[in-house]
Length: 277
Ligand code: AMP
Image (cartoon, rainbow, N blue to C red; front, side, top):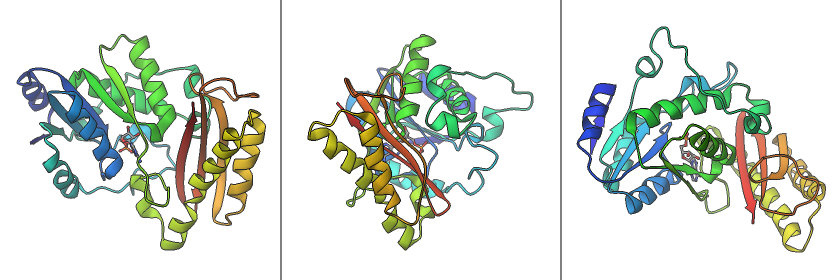
């Protein structure tokens, strides 16, 4: 496993990789969710490239860019046994040098949900992922269902811009009590950590209703909100029952559906989702 920083090193190293290349972009502070993407890439491709870059352009001015958890040494130890060929850790100056002025924007599907409450977030994501794709030139790239809208936006971008890259979306890895793994979970104190299971419990309650035959989207949204309201530490930002592909809010469930939510537990913003097939 080689860890590299500069674009020249990355390009030279990439040229030496024959066969298929699987790519896993991350912001580091790795957990089992990230590792599951790396393992899947390793199963499906000849070589695996991982990037670690906390992308400043996807954080809003009031968000947690500066306190986002970082521990490169720990990350490299976690990756070491997985058979990864290259770990690329570019600096902000490499990704956004002085005078940088080019952006990639996906339109309609970045407007609802995360896009509505995090203006500019997806513009930062699609721009950095484009730059990472151009540098790494992978055959396949691996994303988590945990960030459902991000995966959908990247799929749309790859299709619209003719990237010759297959996007593979992998299941959300969870703690034993259902909390979706996230680098941000370290912000939670023990009491908040307990309260944070309310997202999983609320999604599970809505799924249960769906499984007993309920198809009214508002009834599912109401159920999720009721459960969330039972947790005094939870402050709901949005709760959604939307079409899986367009991400538009539904009245009635007829096809593949995304239940999703963003909830503050104390100062920590958590997101989670379930897919109803
Ligand atoms: P991040 O480092 O948060 O930008 O995440 C990097 C990649 O890991 C993204 O594709 C995420 O969707 C994915 N990911 C994050 N958390 C999980 C999880 N709990 N399960 C599966 N994938 C995840």
